[in-house]
Image 1: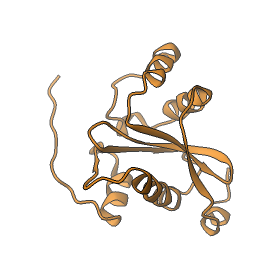
Image 2: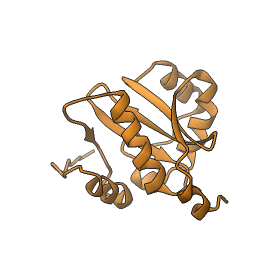
Image 3: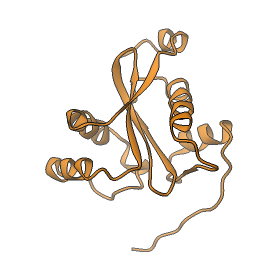
Image 4: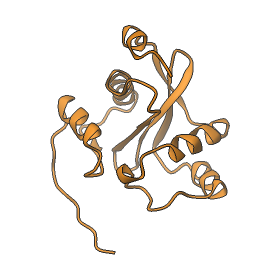
Length: 143
């Protein structure tokens, strides 16, 4: 477990482009994500499906979030200018994500950004509201 107080004092957060060398890290991050907060898929993909997805370059830009030279999460900008963020639960969410979000927006200037968040992901909703985003709509599904 990482010392969260130590991390708060150190804002050494960087973004690096996702490469094939990051596939296993991304898969482990996905496996550890709370399924109730996931909106991109209903079931965990197989490793081969995951590899195919990563290699298809599905986003405009996709980065690994590094803190103190350790991979701690991922952030991407979709082709519809939607931001997606996932971070390892061992790390201080607000501190790292705020810096990663600023870096993403600096590297990918847009007039507006969207963030599609599960209704169950209260932490992300609160974070976005505290950082200049406004709620637009609720989406409903019947399946």
